[in-house]
Image (cartoon, rainbow, N blue to C red; front, side, top):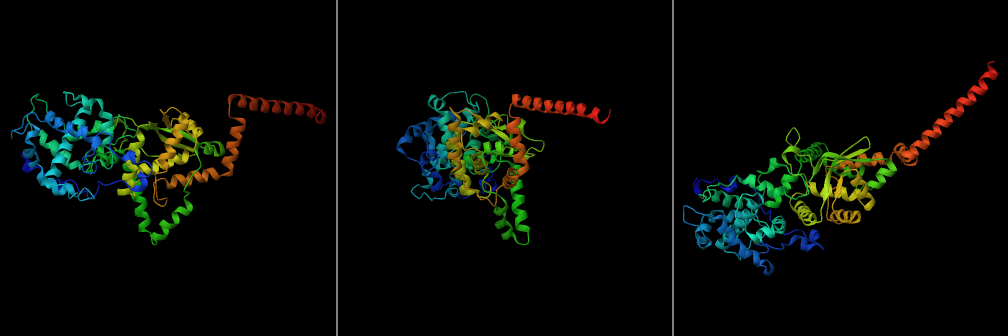
Length: 451
């Protein structure tokens, strides 16, 4: 297939101003979580002194991938010839950025995108075990580099990476091994060592960049449909403004922590059938092909939640996802709302211990106190609209159950008399003795009145 016959990106991707700086309130006190540690991708951190080591590696990645090409372009020395192949995408690639970057000429801008694309493709192919030739500097730091590639401010348009990859498919391989389709090599890059389940059905969606792709693959179509239906129902009413305005009055903004919910009202926590972090993506889809990873169900005093593995390396990813949602998708803040719910449930190490015993949390940190701090710190950056989030029914139902005097009395009875096997035995023995004493009294009095 000739390059001129490649379908233009305008027909496949429609994303503008989607690569930007994280909001100041998200970066407050955590600016380092948004800055790359090893490699600069795109224009925001281009030329940083502490990132120049990897800039020297990018041409090596290019050489590693370019084996033989019909045009004769096989080494970075032919950079001008290679960049010419992609100059037609320059103006469209620029609209993905909120800043204009006029200090980059058209050629320099495309050259940067080409080198970054080759570097990213080399990382993706390494993680998918598609390439056999090793590059020690990449192999040693691949986890750290991958973390840099999922930073909000460290992105290039995904369509450009795809165009470079499609161009590579035209190269006759010396080892006679063709590269797999782009979606296949992307899947391991998204799935490996991540805290959230993946919806592989959205791997081919028109994401703007890699972080956007990760967000789309992690989001639940079922929840998105529920939220869209809720918004549509509100606006179809006779007085939509009043309907939206009055919702927070009947929907609590906070709920008690997990320990209080359990001890005061007897609410139980159970693990759902799947867990966040499971790499067996396809096997965890429901019968309709939808991923329900953020679903939390409350019924008959039991809250069923997916299991989340807590890892110290997740903070950077989660903060960038929250910043992305706050800036681009204010009405679809799935990560922010779920993490805010976890922040509400967890106040101390006692809450972490309870949720871990219930299978809702798999804490790999050194202590439960650190896990509680993990969620509390993340929760401080989650800004949600309480009139428009997919847990408003859950908050209302949990609060109603918590306020019920009957549920509180029953929970108190369970805590005082059925909290342990010995307490149950004591209650049973007491009831048995009471029944026997009653029978003895009956048989003592009955003959007197009925000789």
